[in-house]
Length: 391
Ligand code: GLN
Image (cartoon, rainbow, N blue to C red):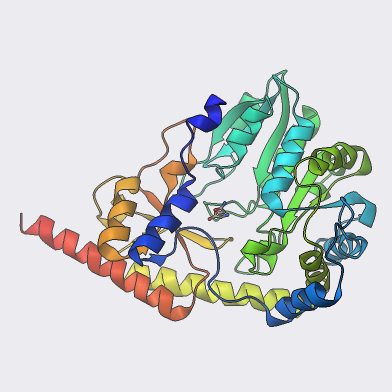
């Protein structure tokens, strides 16, 4: 067996969800909404199952979905792209795998930002690449441009950029992204942009795709996901946008990973991407309310909450909240004793020992669930503090 996989633990997301299922805890760990999803998209998918084709669609994706993705990015992000620059994948994770397999030759160095989404490093290693991690620092999580520049060497081939960034909740600003684009151009790097959170930004922020910046369209592989756009994470319909020269090898990688993606879900996503701006604004506004509700309740309960500019997530700082212990241990105790599952951030660091005091919580849940979770965590914290005072 390959030692990389043989020694690999189950992902922290699956581990915490399994613990939540086993204990009946509220699951604010793995990032998924608990609402059933937009009814019209569900109906469109059901109709497509019953009346559409259930045979292999084209490997590149249904033509109607490729057109819808191109149009969607023209309308929402002002990108100058065409349907033949779009490839449909089975979720963003497959898109990332296809991109890394197609881009990396053995020995190529690939820069990743830490904390890092857990799929990147194993995929880079399996493709024969050498990951070079650059660490972001809380609570601002700004792009460390000097460290990035210092990490680039003669073998550096690409950088993986998750923007907006999970688990930090950061949406990088124009200044940071322009400086990053300059580095990519100067050192002839490819940018593999995981932008699955591109519609989930708050406080009037707009997503800025690296693809749109000077000199980047020719070197960017932009990845998106219907699961995150429509709060249907189980659908696993992703898309890649890249100029034809880059897209062709990606399509070859994709054809031997999953070959294609269920046609009915593709048809429903094509319908969804064409919905009016107001639909996307409403989804954002709903999530922003949920973010503020959870942040407010946790703050009232004595927790120190870090800012969240984007994604389904916010982080709490345990030490600053008066909670003693490291994040993994605390998350296990929360599931068992407080009945709330969360994600310890240190699980998302590989090259360095990450901060052991930050825990990620998903707020894409109903108000009552968020209120209940905040109450449980606040009570648990109170019990800890009281026990310490009386010792
Ligand atoms: N993207 C999800 C999260 O960050 C996890 C997806 C998964 O479990 N593979 O929580």
